[in-house]
Length: 89
Image (tube, rainbow, N blue to C red):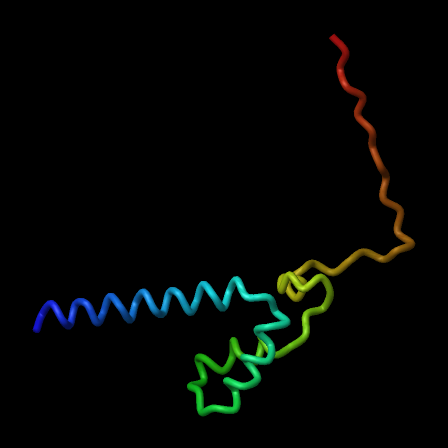
């Protein structure tokens, strides 16, 4: 019985890791409809928050990191460009 319980626990851990990896590596265009369908089911609050974030369209490049990016500077602000010549030997 002990061996069966260990195998069951390992199978649950491996399955959870596989689901997590597939979810993280899945494109956001495929993740959005799955999250919307999952929110129709009764899910706990700790699982509903990431699903709500997954249903939102990304702000730009679909890398899902744009929502945490720093705000861009105003386009009229000057930014000096400095060129450093290579040292010749």
